[in-house]
Image 1: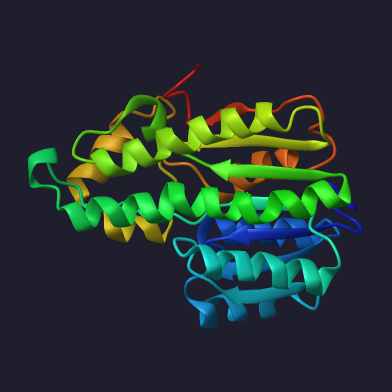
Image 2: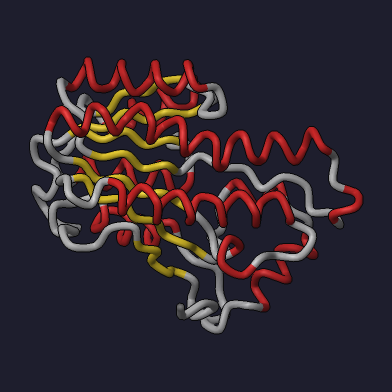
Length: 248
């Protein structure tokens, strides 16, 4: 924790009602910032924001719907008078099944949330950050996007796409004061585990040399550094937080 690191700044975090998104939002508030917690479950977003106090705002939005997330970005920027930080944490795993059994609707939904949602949020936030002359964007990708997980073709593909978007946008904005980076966690035990089979959970654990799942606090610590002014020379980069599973 770095006291005052986000003093006077405003952030928007998607998928922020629970898990990594909530922990990132909590730390930003504790470190002096204001935060809009955006989630498809608006009631939970508001409950989570209420726990964080007066500098937190809970908003309902579906990141897969461009007008919905664009509206949330506009509302947050309007309420706070600025937008300095965007953390794209909303995501779903989709089914754990062989590719030939993967339903087209399931495939499209994973893509809509994980990559299209990240794209829509960035598209809405970047003009606000350009106007303010500063910004930090952190995309939550996954180790699956670097290595691919069996029986998780849509999730792996969508997270690889998030990595590609991060690299492209980071270079696109490199001559501005906006930095764009991604983190690639290995499995972190959150509510998303409820979407997975036990066999898939066991597989993920077997791949982590440290021998345990990550903690949301560990991921949030890295995200908050990337979201801060301290991260001034890294952009378009992918930062590993996988307990040694991937070291590239």
